[in-house]
Each structure stands twice: as structure tokens, then as C-alpha cells.
Amino acid sequence: MYPGAKNLITDVSGLMVGNAQDAALKSGVTVLTADAPFTAGVSVMGGAPGTRETDLLAPDKTVQQVNALVLSGGSAFGLAAADGVSDALRAAGKGFAVGPHIVPIVPSAIVFDLASGGDTAWDANPYPALGRAACEAASADFNIGTTGAGTGATTVNLKGGLGSASLTLPSGHTVGALVVVNALGAATVDDSPHFHAAPCEIDGEFGGLGPKITHNAAKTPVTKLTPGTATTIAIVATDAALNKSQCTRMATAAQDGMARALWPSHTPMDGDLVFGVATDAKPLDDEFVDTLNIGHAAAICLTRAIARGVYEAQKAPGDTLPTWHEKFGG
View 1 (cartoon, helix red, strand yellow):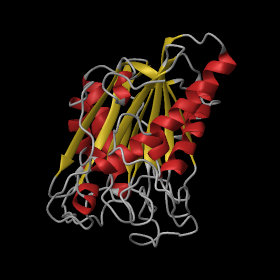
View 2: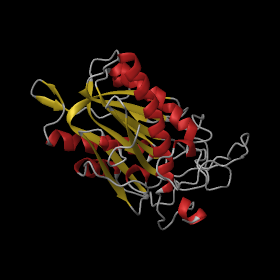
View 3: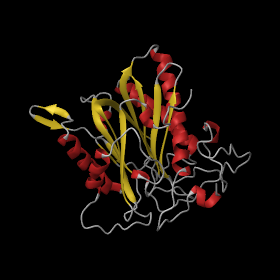
View 4: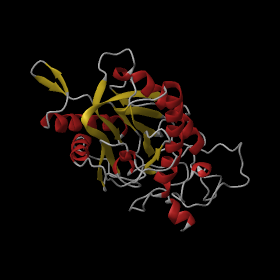
């Protein structure tokens, strides 16, 4: 397995990602969409999720495909970002046809970043406009780090951010991950620059430091803020032809990648969630073997994407925590 040309989730052909953020608010929105609807599932393992339309993604529910997925800051206020995305998609004629009406299907998830140092004294909810702007900016090329829904993200000791990574499998299928790293736990080992994700790193994509030889495996980080103020939300995607059940299984397998990269993960105070996406462009040769390998690759991609999101975070006015580069140099 090797990374795709961009080492981004958009190495899965047909997918596009758009970011929009407000520097004063220190928050933003990230949207994954495509020209054509795509199959999606979801796995929720955190104790405090914030979501919209995720029940629709269960394998037994009627609608089989969606038009976009939204990752947003803003806690519950950020769920309104999907309104702006729906407006943009409807204007473009994209959605589920119900008689003469077009209804975009836009599941979403949020992180709590209201305590990241931004100005949250708004008169009107800013997230619908940010959602629409992110959707309209969607492209195969996008930035990671302090951008989009990763703008105000933090971990226990460092700024978090938006991360992405990809892999091409021997079967020819491509897998990618997109993640907002806003965890209660830590992406780095103890007080060192070494990432928990180091064994999965490819070509020095987050510093090339390798694993830390020893660390305090029993140490539990003190929560960065207060209960209910953390969450890591992600999307894993493939160009394989998967149904909703298989997308859900891919998302569940990818949760292992979160646990490898963030210590601890899936806590009562995190709303950790992974969407699984399939564009259905390439058939499976061997259903058992291919789905196993795709799930494994999704976990590896998510592990790497989390470390990349923290590694690529940029310093900004009013930050409450340092970036990896500020604290460790390089």
C-alpha cells in the first residue's frame, strides 16, 4: 500500500472537500461532497456525539445515498452548517427527488470548539453561511491543519486541526481519511514530540521522528477543558462498490485508527464518530478479502490523518494551546 498522489481523501476519485472558517470566531466548517450521490454509513463510539441525519445511514433505512457530509465546529450551533450546505446543493439541483422537489441529504457531526479563544458573541448563528461557503469551495485540492472545521480544534496539550491521508491498495482500490482532531486525549507520547501514530507514518509525513522507545502507558491526560468539550470526527472513503452495511463496517474498522493515534479515545466526554463513504466506482474482486483490506487501510489512513492534522496546525492570535511546531520546533 502507498499514498495517493495528493495524500488526501480526494485521491478517491470524484470526491471534493471544501473549507470555510472565521478567524475571529476561531471556528469553521468542512464539507465532503461529490458530483454524484454516494453511499454512506456511520460508526459512533464516543459518549457525547452531536449529529444530524445519522439515523438515516443505518443499513435498514430507506435512503441509500447522500449528497454531502458536514464536519463543523460550534458544538450544537454548528449543526446549522448543514442548512447552508443544503441550500447550496439545492441551488445546484442536487438532492433526493420527491415529486417536483429536490431535497439534499446532508448528514453532519460537530465538535465543541467554543472555548478555543474565539469571539462567540454573535447575534445570528454564523454556521449556515460557513456551511454554504465551504460547500461552494469544494475541490479536489484543499488545505489541512488550522482550517475549516479544524480551525479551533485542540487536544489535551496541543492545537488540533484538520487532517487527511490516503492509500492505494494492491487490489487497485483507493482509501482515504478526513478528520477533525479535537480530542480530550493526546496525539503525542507524554511530553515528547513523538506521535502515537508513528508506526503508521509514511515518508515523514508528520515529522519522521519514529516511535518513542518508552512512555507512561498508564498515564491518563487531564481533560483539556470541562466534560463534554471534546470530540474527534472523521470520514473514511473508498472508490470500491460498497453497500451501506459495508460502509458502516469500514467506518467501524477505522475507529481502530483513532484509538491508535489518540490516547485515550472514545471517552464519555468525546463524541467520537466516523462516517464511511463509497463512491462505487470499482467493483470488489473478492468481497471478503477486499472489504477486510479496505477496513484495515481505512484505520491506517485515519491514524495518519490524525497525526497530520496536529502536525500541520498553524499558530493564530488568541490560541489557548501551542502548535506542535511551536512546542517542539522543526
